[in-house]
Image (cartoon, rainbow, N blue to C red; front, top):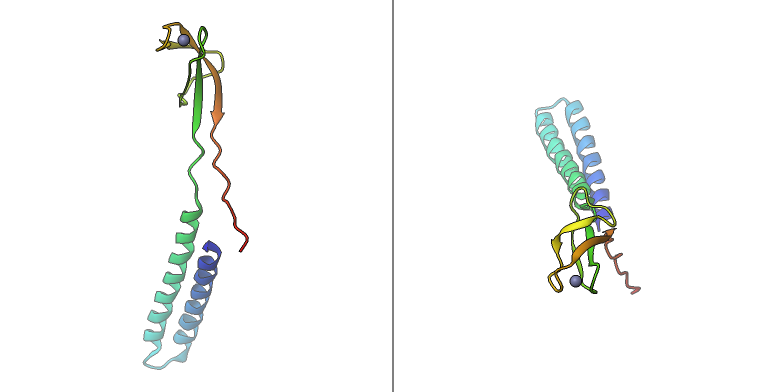
Length: 119
Ligand SMILES: [Zn+2]
């Protein structure tokens, strides 16, 4: 879908440029109208191009920290905080047995790949 939008943007920018170019070279009274139309078509094409580019930009994948209790099997996953590292003791006590907890792992949550259906 984004490829179609990009191609349409390129086509419109090209058509707009041709209209602008020939409009300026006709020399008659209508030349400024053609130039104006060409500019509008061109800017519309470039708007489509930039819109497609921003839509493709994805936010970085979130990082999570896995915390594990050293005494029981309690496990918690929370957002990664700057300075977190594996086996770092966590200040918070286990909500189940109030023992000390350590960081078991730091993971980057990968986004699920897009499911493609064969039609
Ligand atoms: Zn515990």
